[in-house]
Image (tube, one colour):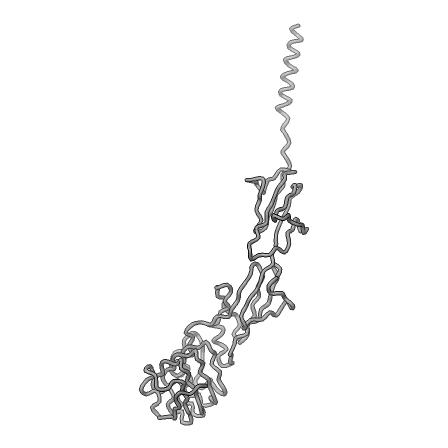
Length: 311
C-alpha cells in the first residue's frame, strides 16, 4: 500500500514537471502597413506590427469632399470598398494596403503642360509626373536675367525659384495633392543703372549702351532707376508699361536716336534730366499736365511734350 502511494506521488510529480517543462507555442503574427487616409475601425488599439493570425480587421478610407478615390489596393491588387468606404478582411500574412486619389491641377495663362499629353487636369491620378513649361509674358531678351533672379513659380502660395535664366523655364511636378500654380513677379522690381555710372543691384550686370533696338519693358517692372538707359545710342524705341511708377534722373539721357516715348499715368515721379541730350525725342504723356512728383528739371532741354494722350 505504501509503495503504491509513493508510485502515485511520483507519477503526479512527473506529470506536473512535464507540464511546466513544455512551453506553449508563440501565436503566429503578421504586420499591416497602411497608406495615407486609411484608418482602423476595429479592433481598437491594434498593434499593426504584431497581429495574430486570422484576426478580423475593418478598415475605412477617409475621403474628403474635394477628393475622389482612384484605387484601393491590397498587396497591389485592386479591391472594392463597401458603401461606407470600408473594407473587412482576415489577416493571413504580412499585408500592405494603400489608397490613391484623383487630383486637379489649375494654373494661369503663363503655364502649359509639356507632358503627358492629353491630360485631364480635373482628374489626374496620384503620383503622375507632369512637366510644365513656364512662359514669361511680355518678355524681352534684354531683360532675361531679371527672370532668373526675381520671378518665382508660386505653387499653392509657396514660391519656387525658376532655375532657368531664359525667358522660358520648366518645372516637374508629382501629383500628391491638388495644385494651383501661378507665375508671381517680384514686387517693386527695378531696372538698375548701367555699370559705368552706378553700382549694379540685384546681381544683374549691365554695361553702358547695352540696350539697343526695340525694347519692351516687362509689365511687372515698377521703377526705371537713375541712368538705366543712359547713353544707349542704338535705342530705337522703348515702351513704358503702366506698372512703372518711377523714372530716375538721366534715365534716358543721351539716347540720341530715340524719337518717341510714351509716359503712362502710373508714373508718379521723374528725376532731373531724365531725357536730357536726347535731341530727337518727342514725349507723349497720358497725364493732362506735369504731376507734382516730377522734378522741375525733368525736361530742361525743352523737348516737345504732348499732354493728355491715350495710347
